[in-house]
Structures are given as structure tokens and as C-alpha cells.
Length: 180
Image (cartoon, rainbow, N blue to C red; front, side, top):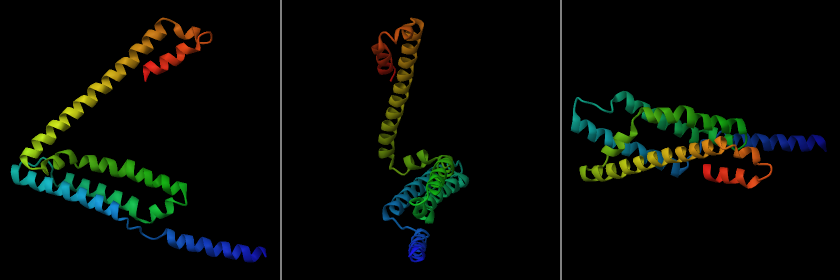
């Protein structure tokens, strides 16, 4: 009985492994990568036509962007994706590929410039204004949050309020609420 059970388990494991080494062809991943590559490529072509020899995004940067997209494709469509459902260590390798390989390659490709130049001139100005406004708003907001947090910390620590936190626990809660 034990031999029969172990033989069935081995067959099931083999079948699962066979399914695990298949490439997955998820249409939404492929469509996203194709759309991103098209958008980047059209922006680079329009930029090169406009500026000629003064290349802002050159061949090296385009190649690094293409390698970044290739890394994303490999991480999300190769057998790594199928095996990552079964093995946590492979899932973490997938994360490392996406964060430590693909992300720097994509950033080296200077996609913001290429994506912006994929628009027509009027659209480019409109997107540029929105982009600049959002970036400035996010930057100012991040600075204000840090300043508020730093001021609260300095105030509470300099007044020695945390020494009384055992008698008045609401003070520590209020500090946490204000510093977030």
C-alpha cells in the first residue's frame, strides 16, 4: 500500500514539474510589454528626427531599455513564473530579477524623455505641465511630511514628554498620530 501511494505521488510530482517548466503566454503581460516598447520606440524615433546628431537617447540607452523589457518578459513569462508558484525561493529570484536587474536597466534607458516625445507637440506640452506639477507637488508634500515629523519628534523629545508615557499612554499615541 505504501509503495503504491509513493508511486502515485511521484507521478503527480512529475506531472506538476512538467507543467512547471512550460512558458506562460499571458496576453496582458505581452500586450503591456509590446505597448511600452512601441511607445518608447516611437518617442525615440521622433526625438532622433527632430534633433538629428544631438542624440539625447542614444543606442546604448535604447539597448538598456530593451534589455530591461526582456528581463521583465523573462521573469514573467518563462518557466520561472510557473515554478515560482511552487517554490518560494524561485519566487524571490523573480523579485530580484524585476527589482535588481530590470528596474535599473529601464531607468538607464531614460524612458521619461522617450515617452514624452511619443506625443505630438501640443500633447507634449500638456503632459509636461501635468508631469512637472505632479512632481513638484509630490516633492513639496514629501518635504512637508518630513519637516512635520522632525518637528514633532524634536518637540516631544525636548520637552521630555516620553518620560511620562507610562502614566499617560495617550501622549505616545498622539505623537505617533502627528508624526505620520
